[in-house]
Amino acid sequence: MKRKRGRPRLYLAASGVEDMPVANTEERLLALLATLEECQAFLTDRANTETARLLSLAILKLRMELHKVTDSELKALCDMIASDEPVQEQSTTRQLPPYLRLIK
Image (cartoon, rainbow, N blue to C red; front, side, top):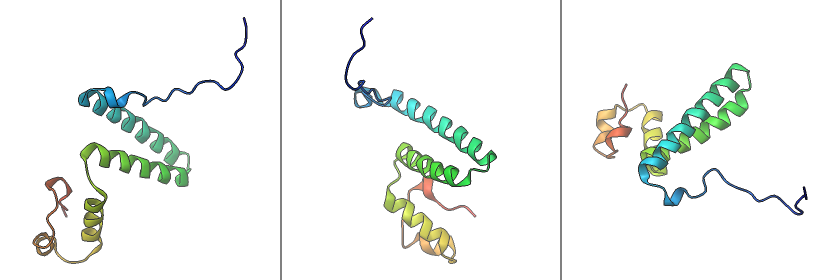
């Protein structure tokens, strides 16, 4: 058998996602999310907290993509959580989507 010369061709797991139906793409992203969460739990159990934190950022970004949350919506939610003002007063100044409402 003859060996091929040169670099092996790369195949990405996400290749062709643009052509997939939305439901199938969402299912794949949900499966990926579950796998990432398992990896994060494993890393946390092994006291590898720095890597687990980095993975949590990837999980957050993927969740934002799945739920179509924009960076500005996330920032508004973080600002709301960081402030000590009651949520009712802030809801009149900033309208957040219902899935980003703060529940205390």
